[in-house]
Length: 368
Image (cartoon, rainbow, N blue to C red; front, top):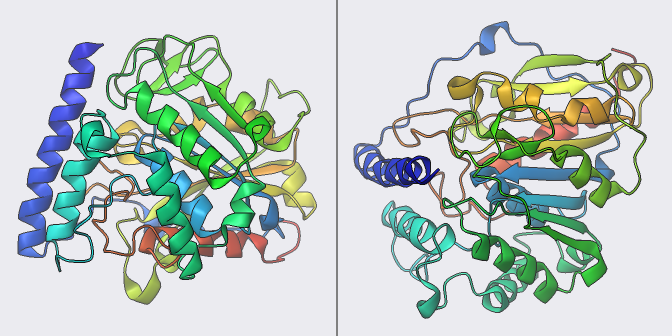
């Protein structure tokens, strides 16, 4: 458990070193993918105004960033082993041009927003981060905070998680409270002996393990719990899937020919009912670092349990993917600015690309 956490921290330090080298050289290479053989993201007439998001680790931070950027579309968010929105942003973010800011942010992200070692300097202060979010909304960089206040929030921290420590996740819960999300809309689960991982009731490693594929069996159905917190009572999940996991080409969703660090191929799960009739809701599941398809295959996608709830609740599950690269060797979502200074805003390359995916799913193409 501790060895796995130590390995992850060493990997993040190595990531910082790799990022420094890659940024100085202007490198931005990506891993190998199968985009040429992937399909076009299907047009399903989805109801994207009832979209929800979830994520683990870097994916948790991205879930929060996407929620804040597109709060008009998002009705709820699940933050698993992640902290409050904007936590990694350095106070020097606007003063240091170029790549230096991203490196400063990364140091703050590791020490302050994962390990909670910078509290004495006010890092991860929910009140201050809520104030900054309101300022960003006032500038029009993210959607109005009033849209966030209506959301339903699920947060999770495992008692054996030494990678993103429980106090950071609790700061995320306080952040939403400071924004004005009602107490009854916020659910924090912190009583399970889970490691740094997505939790299931039958798949993955032993509960306390923090290691690949970052899916653990704690006899707890996290997918169902977070979806129920966001959407309310659900129709019971199926034992056998009747939908399809579709590999789709993510390349068309990058703006101006830039990938924004995304892999060439993403995955979407489409229930039979959503192929036959428009109006299904969309849930976006953001993987964590070292949990993309390049590194763990489809284990997170197929073992997380989201698809079993999707079939009975008219829900499309979108699994966007980040590529591993010299600048991002762990395949993390950008929560410290490696894609540019707008990483927390609506115009951030990764946020914009995923939002374009929603637009594609919303388009009416008839039964697929």
